[in-house]
Length: 334
Image (cartoon, rainbow, N blue to C red; front, side, top):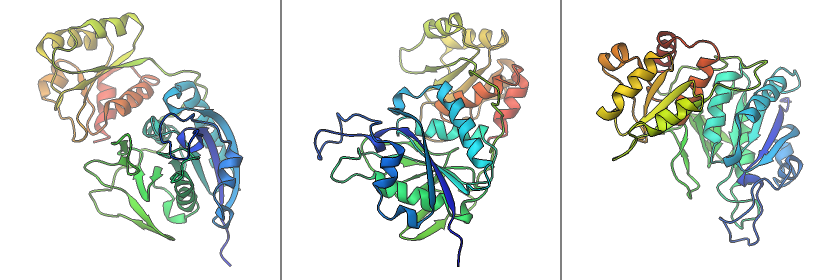
């Protein structure tokens, strides 16, 4: 008889644990109301998939997620992964910042055991709540040996996406989480997990690249957003005055920096504050000219969106402030 896997669930709140006054309400609800025990109990037959244990790390709306909680979460996930009686881990999380938490864990927790994040686009009290199915499928993936060694995964709406590529592309739809330009790593059809093994979806696994053990905070990095008539240096200067140790510029296209801002950002990079150039576009790979990288010292974000580039830069700054070394680190993610 096949041994039933042991799956540990860590709850952090979010819409998946939310309550609304009306069963038809999908906005105006209060996130983070149900406990981990209530979430597990709400999915009938979940214990048939795996032996379950759970803990409540926090119970918040994910718009209020903080880096200090990330550090605690990484510690708890790593502790669970080290347990012999845990085969996989599921984290319930709000969708607003789910992709960022997934990417942070991808970079900081080193394990081959499946780590799966899930959430919901509708609160638990909605007449068509998507949370129960997302929990079911997340436990299904976390309990499956085929998910071993694939890094941190996000399971939502029957799709399995990798932490490095997944992003929230819609604020209302159930299929909100996708991997633009890559596609999902797999899909779940009833009881079957179907992995997409094509080269287009294959990515290097950067699991546990940077240890955050003994860290109590992350270096301050600010994102500056590009737009017509935008920053003339005001936000860059404000960020530097506020103690930013790194900047990410969310450019309008493929790393396009306005002429009026190039000089200031060049001075910033020359002063020892790394400047990563990302894009506000929803997909693609930022590739900078040799002049921008070698002369100006800018760091291309490659396929990372601004919020993920910020996380990688923060973690890089815990190890080095050398621009060349950080350029090499980012290049390894292309």
